[in-house]
Each structure stands twice: as structure tokens, then as C-alpha cells.
Image (cartoon, helix red, strand yellow):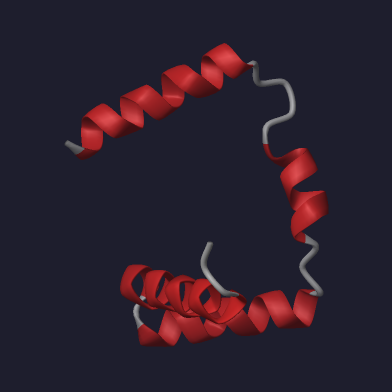
Length: 66
């Protein structure tokens, strides 16, 4: 199991590599300012989606990434 520090470091690396330095900083500030609630966001993320449709979407994304 990874430590909290390792997870934070990996998360920052992912954000910065995906968004670039400026947009990553903006993203972090937006989350801090908006008091982002991950648990609430997650409960609203896939309303109305079934496991089957999510699986199909994931499979298409996987195939597209290959």
C-alpha cells in the first residue's frame, strides 16, 4: 500500500503532466476555493448509468487509447 505522501505526489504528477503548469495551478486553486467535496461529486457522477453502460464506455475508451 502506498503512503499518503506517495499518493499526493503521484496525483500532482498526473495533474501537471495532463494540464501543464499554469492550468494545473488554476485547477488546484479552484478546488481549494470551491471547497470541493469529492464524496458528493462522486455520488452525482454517474446518475442514471448502469454498470453495463459504464463498462461499455470504459471498453471504448480503452480501445481508443491503444
